[in-house]
Length: 487
Image (cartoon, rainbow, N blue to C red; front, side, top):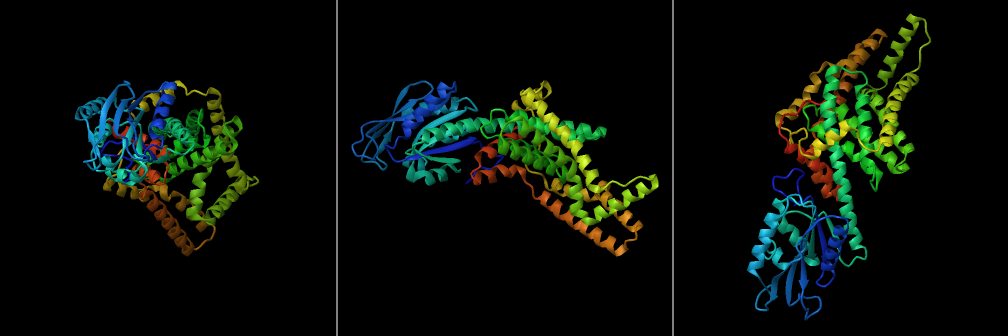
């Protein structure tokens, strides 16, 4: 029933049901929403049902006319006929005009209002034949007035669930509709920056990796932080910027280098740290700098923490032994592990914090980032495969054949052997290293980012689902080959 993240058939980006019984004010609310959007300079398409006299309360009117929102034209639509079931006869000329209107609808129209879907539509009649024509134009937001008792039947006929249901008799129904339109704009912006961040990871990350630039991971983290800062201006909830990184992480999983655990984990966790910080402390320079500092600290420490997960306390023992040997050879006092790791992390954190503060002062992205955003908005972003092939999924396990994967184990094992550890201990350490690596790679192999939007929608998180789906869709439409991404 729910719409997949990467659809083969077109559908609105957001589908809202305005529910209620006849006479509950659904049409009036749609008219108010259309007026509010016009006052903001937006264009609204669709039609309102103007009811005639209701002979019986809570029953259908004697006749209905449709008022076209864009042109203001009023068209005859239905006349009550008790000999029919449901008791209405529709004007065929008006229906043909509605079909022509739907076919001529501008692709990507921001807001379409449909009034109203009832018993006929639940049977696939009445206004329902317009639905596939409207969907082909991929409207962004569709608000549909639906009889309360028919919501489930209408969903079944549409083949998708409503992202939101709003009761027309709720005192703040109009405020809810208006807020959704505002939030839609915010999530669209987040999706744009998330896709641009993914492009940066693919392009700039590949270049830095190929050139073996020092501190490249920290540099990319700093750029990611700047992206979130630029995306965060004007958001009603600043913590939403964490989805910029979540989207970038998902796009990373769809790239040829998507099997790499560390870069995906780094992008995801850094976004969570930054977003949580600004959500708690507010959108101010203190929160921005602290969020950037936490991003840099994770960029520096995540490799060590991952290796500690795979090697345990033997990693610390190997470090202590190696530092002690070096210190004795140079006749120096050996620094303790916390000082070395802390100093290393502080350098990375400071770089990211300063970058985020600079972005805060600029408020607008520099020309290089604006060009990336323009390419993303135009749908010429780096394409990716929405669903990895079986060969691509198996290729992820080739990570175990890379010498860099085994290098930490080889170094630690060598130091421990030199310090007198037994081969049995090294064997158990190797078994642990391989087992944890297998578990982590199995978790990565289960990632299906193209399905994330569907899962988010099922849980009612239509905003993140919209942002992620937009970023995925732009890549599916983009021609060309995907360059390998590296961090």
